[in-house]
Amino acid sequence: MLKNERQYKCAKAALKKWLGNRDIYLQRSINGEQPAWLLQEEKLAIEQEIKQLRADIEEYEAVTQGKKEPPPVAEYAEQLPSLLIRWRLHRNWTQRQLAERVGMHENMIQKYESENYGCVSLHTITKIAAVLQAEDLT
Image 1 (spheres, rainbow, N blue to C red):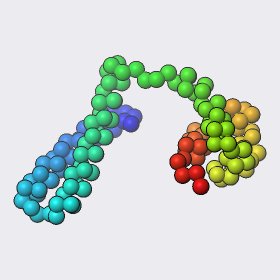
Image 2 (cartoon, helix red, strand yellow; image 1 turned 90 degrees about the vertical axis):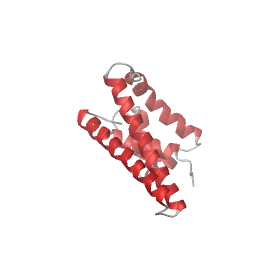
Image 3 (cartoon, rainbow, N blue to C red; image 1 turned 180 degrees about the horizontal axis):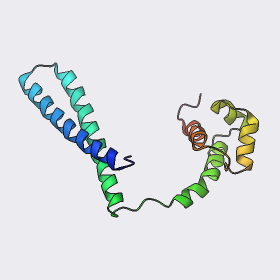
Image 4 (cartoon, one colour; image 1 turned 180 degrees about the vertical axis):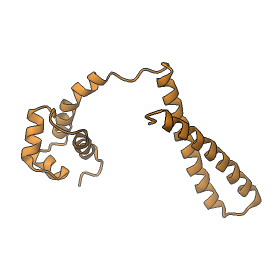
């Protein structure tokens, strides 16, 4: 996500560079200078980078030009505490089990939930959410 005009300009410059790299790739492909498998991997990486930069640039332009309205922040912020608790329950984890997986004391999770995560940093909320959403639940 591009956060300001400077990042937007850098992304546009990077896109131009990556498009040039794609042309270099095509030339090497034609000349047979690299093994085919390596060229395929390079092409995939270049195309993915181009795709991501284009998406970031398009989103930035759409938002800054008023073509795309961001989702309502208050709605998501209000739902976040209950979502975290629901995910813990969905995992059939106690507060202690969540705390162990996050690497904190059970009392902290109890406090966070009792205060609807109102006293928690965004970093900690993100860490808890990542643990709750992790696919490898070993």
